[in-house]
Image (cartoon, rainbow, N blue to C red):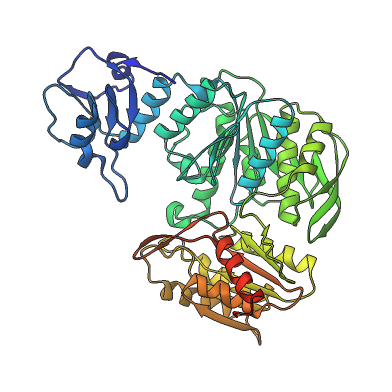
Length: 501
């Protein structure tokens, strides 16, 4: 993929910029990581929470940067163009999509937003559209995929520079569709600038990210921006659709922000797509979809009421984009799982072990309700809460775990810079309000906690390991280490079966 633009054309997108050492040059690429800079690039100096791009100007110049975009008064050599702007975010929102020729306007784009369910819905949709014969790019929490090519990702929705680079690569590779998880942070910070979404899915809205948004109302308004964009200015594609879960209390707000065709889905409330005759079991589920669009009976390899909603959201989006019912049914019935989403860990044990990404009160309640619906044996729950994040959900999650589990082990998630014992004390406040005579432990070390849960498990019990799911790292006050719940669980199961526990 080769992109280039004259510096003059880029400066036209930066009204008010102060330019020094102006030259008639061509910019070959835009980079904000000095390690990725090559000859002819524009280097962006963004000030982040832990890294200041201005500290890497010299490194970028040594790598070949010919122009620097900055917000601080830093000296640069006379042979390098210095571009000073007041608002870096707004500048990048305008310049970067233009530089890459607006790839998000040249492919069909489906955005999925909400507190829970985004990853599963995007994976379901990827399978459906590929079965229908389309080439599909996926951008999500776990990874980026350009058909079968896999790229790593660090935010649910990447920043505007990285996102536009990825979209340009997808367009160059001939993708017909891009299916993307769209986070509230990305919408609030407009990381999706330059993208034109065609179909947007709303899953649900529960307490999360209030450390960033401050209030639930702000959180909801951020999500609603995705639906505002379906009828925004400068749209070049037709046929816009909003897919809304009407069982969620925030659905009315999302519909009010959707000036386009709306498909509704739900279980409890009347909807265009309605789930009926739901039968959940440990290794799958079945239910019927009825409503104004079509009737369909599904026998699936995934389970849980939350997955009924995920399937309905995917069916709604695929239907809105013109995929036939036969293809949708074939694809969803062949779907197995998403890594770290109610993922069964099988090591030959006579009890179930489930790893799940649930890290919100609603997410934890969903998986525990599912576990309770498929087994009358004990539920042993291992979970924690992230550090330097919304503290208000800690006692709430403690209470939920205590009310819905038989044995509770509170442990570290990603404590980050916080004292993990303090996090556990806040979780404990919720546990003790609902504990009764149930057993609970606080174990700071997550590996020890998982080993203890598996040691305690008896035949047909369900061990739930919640919070990290697909993640293969843990962020501790001392730094980041490799940590994979699935690996630790399998090792603990093996030790138990070998008689070492």
